[in-house]
Length: 269
Ligand SMILES: C[S@@+](CC[C@H](N)C(=O)[O-])C[C@H]1O[C@@H](n2cnc3c(N)ncnc32)[C@H](O)[C@@H]1O
Image (spheres, rainbow, N blue to C red):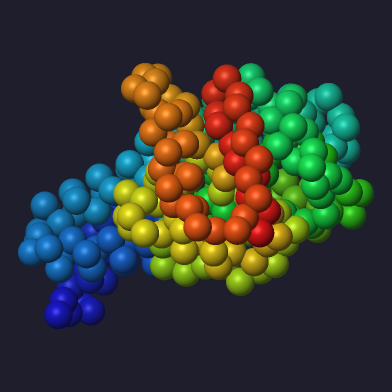
């Protein structure tokens, strides 16, 4: 058994670096516990935890985001989802995170197409959201929609919450470690966009458990079609096989959508 003080000490050391200070401590604690249980200590334990945090989160930031500067800009932005100025702001912000950046070329069609069978959508649970809530202006939603978003980055979630508040959206944000607990909120549709590969780096079994337990009638699951480095490496086939194998035996309806930069499945339970 690893001592609690050792775990807390490692968490502190890991988060002493600015790159990791805004990550929910629950996740850092889980990874620290695992590193110590594998016999790592000192600098190698700190390095192990930071490497994992980089792979599952840090690697997606194309540059350090100055949230206070973006918040100031948000305050000067139109408060209407139809505004061109607001959409330009959202697109520029989404460009700062690799995952939303590669969705920009398909944004006009991505949500319209994938959500068409269930639109206009009333409520969304965006799991491991990244900056995806800023794509709301491109989603086919009811006028009085609600949105709940969660991720591991507290500073990013704070900006997303300010975005909701600025636009008067019925939206909430929460820090979450999806490997540790499944959110209990209910929604018409949950998004699990391009996050399965990240979550499975911590726990190979987590994806099916999430799909089973998430409180939503529909789940929009997606996968990248190329690596962060830009290589295809047979990824679409690999992820498609992985997804169908994972859900085999489930009496769920599946609709598949293929885009230039993303492959999506609308799961209906
Ligand atoms: C590939 S990005 C996808 C982001 C967003 N869903 C999108 O499609 O643009 C993976 C996201 O998973 C988040 N993440 C990684 N591990 C997580 C965990 N254990 N719990 C919740 N979110 C996590 C990362 O911070 C990152 O925002």
